[in-house]
Length: 251
Image (cartoon, rainbow, N blue to C red; front, top):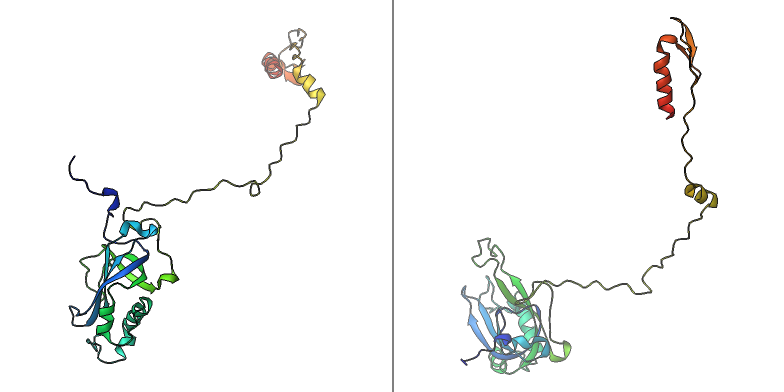
């Protein structure tokens, strides 16, 4: 047998499905972004938990950009309140790093700290922030929405349709109605039967007896004759046809 790989233990993608993950700090470094802004590059690994076991030991990376266009290196205290300074402060608070001011000491204290991070999966938009065509449009990405202390949340993964690697559309099962919910069905009342109608329907139909027609003596031209069937006065020349028509109607 050849070398085996743990196929079922490997996620289908390195993009995390939306959820809350228990993580451990690996590294946090002060860096300058590609457009010259101060940022902090964060690297955490997913801790083992039954709800997120498939992603254990995988790394989640994000860059928290502090600098702005007006103050790229965040040298003005007010810059920290305009950009992602609030998010950075929340990270330090929820990871329970004791240092509140010295950024170098905060970075040095980051490896090994444990906390929870709410990660969201999204797709790259068609346009960039400056209105340009996005070459990565439609590709799945991750971003963090919030941090929590260990005691504040339980790790979980959003199981909505289409979220996460290999997720299949979920169909909510239709539960059968309980006895309390089902409307009572009243059986129909038996039909009232008229015995006379039943007897009449069962009796054989009486035979059809043709009405005897008395022979008619030849009539003179222009003479009117009374029909022996309907009693109508009919010219003698039309009498025979009228009698046949009346007999046909009765039959």
